[in-house]
Length: 221
Image (cartoon, rainbow, N blue to C red; front, side):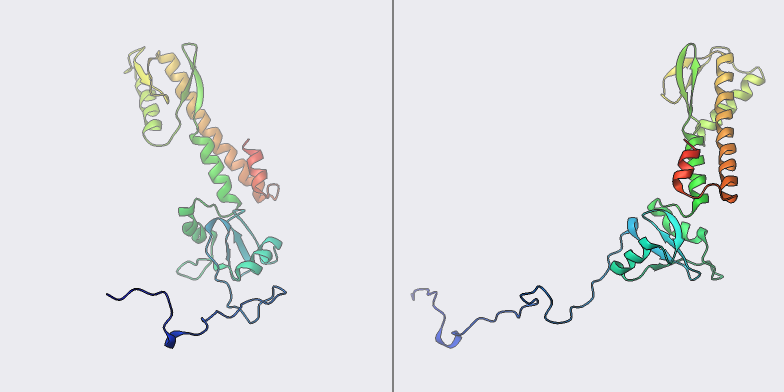
């Protein structure tokens, strides 16, 4: 059996191919490099409309084509995505909102106002039941429907005084009709107050008194 050898056969001897350098000693490229391809990052992207409106996902606000942040972003990424259009060709906030909702993004000040109003509406309210602080859920759906059903039962004399009710913590409690009615009315008042505040903040926006997300947050604080 012949022995294995690490020697390169004579016919294969010669210098190995070495890739040509890309950069010179000064760090500059020796020839034109291909342009970088932008990677879509939904949390830091822009959408541009033909009328000059530009939406920033990082700030979740509509700005203009001369915005300094947008211009700096363009230097790196090259171009914004086109603003979505309706079948009639209109580039509306509503169409962009449809496209961005899966990412949890909001388009424009009115959308931020509606979001803050909804968050306040459904966060619940704490009331006192038999001397104990209890959170009453104001979530839409079954929780809100249960409050309306019990309200009707008390009003019509169909609920037994001291009947059991489960509040947001899931703990069953014996609740008097008086305490139950007070809790329900407080919850419904809380919901109405959220709508009233939302309408007031929207009116301030339309009057030019509220212009930023920070203004909205302060109004709903």
